[in-house]
Image 1 (cartoon, one colour):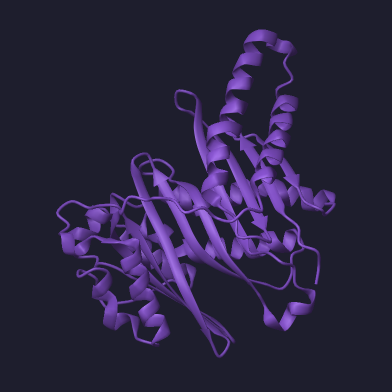
Image 2: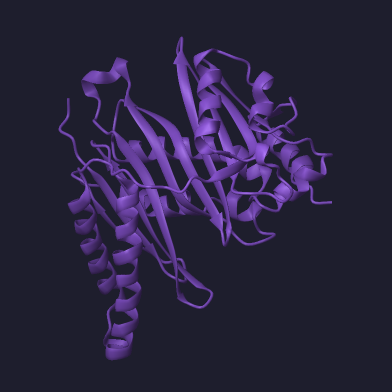
Length: 347
């Protein structure tokens, strides 16, 4: 068994999408690997499908991605130990209408507290970069080495994050928040099987158009779980982490006051992973109290279906009474284009 090690990466993108990066890891990277690392913030934060599909209102942004990790038993002799992996993104304006992003990737052998790390990023590291840049530009003018300053701030940020790693998660008081379920997905992967299905409102239902105003698109929601699960596989391969089984736990998206929450759970039987996930939004006009539930309610429905090997279609209305049993395949580009044509139609 290899000695545990952290993965800590900070990426700062300025108003022109110029990327500055700093990575703390025991491994020495080749030039090709360094070039691949520089692409990670683009891949995590701005996949082409997400920005393109959202062009009608501006680009939705990824705020938080959390994965569940476990060891592959058949590879345990050569496995690396990682219990936590999450991605955090802080978006702040350096000037009106000019956004900057501070993006962090954290992989740890311990069960880390992402909320604590996110506070350090948004309350200290990101503001320090913006305020320090502005102050030095005013004081030093052309003598100010902006690139050197940002790199130094990222190094300080890495040290601050590392200081808070290794402690157990805190218990936070959270106001109970109710959500409206807009999509349920089911994925089956393993032993030559790879099949994904999406369930939602029928295209003819007027409710679909109201939902469409509050999400990036049905196309985007269709591809997110597979996209980010595969992206972490590629990321861990880049860091040469082996023997780790990956599953999406949660994704948070936002656009101004709008937000979308995705979470899923899974079970593995006879080498096949079956996962069920929910896309939730905080509210929708005219939704009855019966249609608004807290996250725990939806999670309980998923676990009941998985643990008792039940058919998802028979329990769809537990998630949303307006759901149709009609399933939409999301396995090929043709499937996705079909969803885009019918479910993302605004006419």
